[in-house]
Image (cartoon, rainbow, N blue to C red; front, side, top):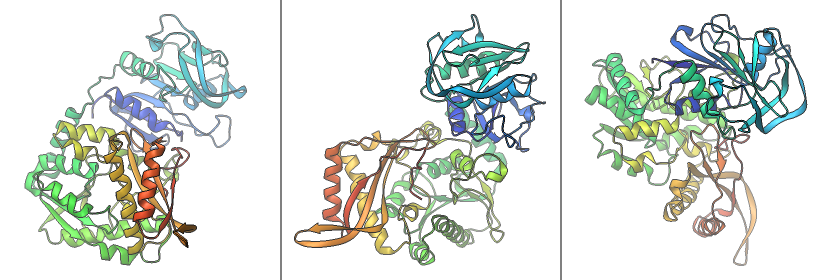
Length: 510
């Protein structure tokens, strides 16, 4: 990729939002832990230092090596990144006397400062730190303040190096995108060439070169990611792509048949494999979330190994891994980002499977995958499908998994999702689904006491799944849905609605 931007991650919850904002400017960027050795700084035209939960004054604070960056490549420090530069180059950082968290307004902007072009005094920004820059080093120049934070923004004299103590990447910083554009486009000279069409053109060319005449096997799920990945690879190698859709017994109601029918009209070579009994047998008695994910991942790979042997001389396994999967699967030992959960489609294959991996979407966020799919003419209804986790109901049934629990949750989920579609709410929600809890509750049906399962309905709005807000569905809809579930699904007598956002909660319960 040309004209890339490097984001060094110090563990901030907002790091992924910086990347999202940069991508909105049609600029490609990548996130690496601050201490990673896997990138070449010569590949990048600008660098952004993220925020961090650490204090620069702490003994265990992250200390990046900026010797090849500062003064040589345009550099922007955000929050911790700004404080680190001030602290490390002769300034003073200390605990703030006032609470610097939440909305603030710029009270001073240096005149004719390119960094703040198009931004007016009074512009709202978002603060999130307990430390503050008390004194700037001699070579640093103050370019922006808020009422409570004098050194809210600075630049280093005779360098394209900037620092801000607020977060331009969050929605509450009203001119945040303008500030990022000023830095990346006007100061760093990064070209805005990252578009869906350019991604398709570049990726198909790279796949042709990488795969040649090799055969590739790909697991279709019916979701957006695997479908777009399959279409990209098909453009590159045509009939040498062999698609397999596995029924792991944890899919939505009738999904196996419906998805196979959808793919008939897309020109993809697809084989359906019903391995539901195999998955459910392997999962028997396992209740640990990570344990279930690993079993599902292992059996998924084993099924692929079986099917791959039916294809002569297959060399590659393609996967629809996207960027949030990669980010969330980074180990804490490899950088500051903590592992949130394992993704069964991230990481290496076992030694017994002699296939190489190709992941054409592993640099994209979910909304970017949809735009790429649209640029290739994939049906809008398919692209608009809500995300569905790879482990399926395996992580929406809390506790151990049985065929009866799967049946129960399939019916509940079907009523909920179909209801959203019938009421015109489906496309207003980014992801929706139901969870089956491992608890029974007392109820009354007719004159009889019941002691049956409780289910949770969840609907969130999001851009890419990195953050999400719960959706305020109409009470009338929830009431109607609850009645349909309790009256129509044997074994369920209580329905609740999840009003947690991410963070602090995750979208899935496991």
